[in-house]
Image (cartoon, rainbow, N blue to C red):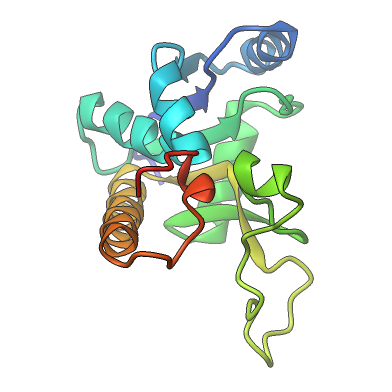
Length: 186
């Protein structure tokens, strides 16, 4: 359509390792420059676990100068390889005519604490009855979206998380304190 689109590839990693290097190498070979966020956020990950990805990505978006056509590609750091070019990925995204594309998966993955107790901590009522899909759960490992819509989505996730945590803190016995990160003072 003749418009100038900037694509930002972002990944969240609290440490560097061989898998992150493989992501960076495959991205570089396909024309991407990787923006690694999270390496200075170990405390955030220790406190919030996987939710820190949301906060870190929001912080990154706050630093990127806004342009209407900016597109953000957010991927997992340790299990993603690129086998297509930026141009191809952008063409396919624009063809879908969606503002946000979020990957989905078959299973629900709970946080480390719940998994250590062999609990999923997932909503047993999901997916809702009558919803016919083979992959009902969002996967934070791959997202492609316009900057504005992704920022609005992240802001709503952060608001939801903060509202939930406020509710939990005001409601004794609602949730096992270990699930909240091991703080037994709640």
